[in-house]
Length: 210
Length: 191
Image 1: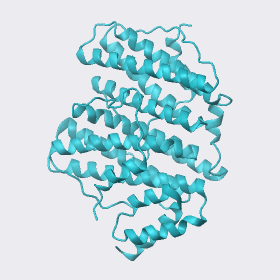
Image 2: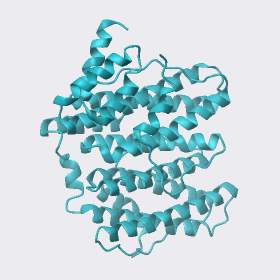
Image 3: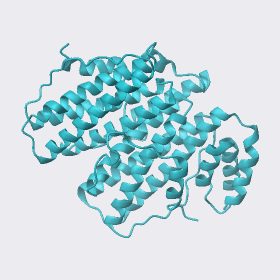
């Protein structure tokens, strides 16, 4: 990893601050080659930070990392050549949404005074159309659950409003993809279930190279 | 390609405001929109919308619908009724009194008019919850509202698909304040 990138990452970790939230976020954000190093910096930085702001920064950076994964996944899926017509349009549209989410969340982290998480190196199962749609379906349902899991933990009302406006779009994506794979649009019934960082991170890490 | 959607722009504008006033403060537009309502007030407003949706799908179930639309009407009627019950319980849990259901009138006569109005109601429901949620004080109530709005968004997408519309027309769902939601649903409220 270039030296400059390492410095930027350390700065993110310092901004992300201490506590379980931040360390969960950095597990995902810092999945690169200097993983061990990064964890150490974050633990050291944890002591002198303000909990409220840093909690939100860590949550938004966690969401940002998930959005990076989604955006890159759809970009690569669209480029496979497996999709045509309406399905290709859908993949491109969803991909564009995820890209806009990346931009908005990057801006949000900056507005909070933090350093946006970097785009992770990725690896996705792209062997055939069916695998891709199945992966997309799993990822969107997980993404919606991830936002739902974080919403009550967000302190800043504007960040919460932004997260909610993304959350329901991920839910829309999930419903369409569920339809495509023959699953119920609402697999949890009338009340969607949230997912914690601890539940989401191991799954998300499957898509991170390194 | 539009780099900045209107919603994203608004989000950023709001964030800039919050940077000026300090991160701990609720944005002025949020407080103004829901002044004095409190969690029970917000839930009662949501309850009214859920009454409306539940009654709507119940009426739709009496129409002559094709397989997929009929299945959806039944499933969504059930969900909205469960939302009604959960919200009533939540209002009581906060020491409040659940509002009674208004009487409604739905101008639906066939599958096309049903699905068209369903799309409007579900999209409006999503925007209403998203608009109200940041003003909720209790984390538990916020979590409950979130688990409902996610389901409403899934409903909206499914109905849009049936109508051949884009299931997710924008990257950021819009928010509506109470006044805008009321304006949208007033024509359906008889008394």
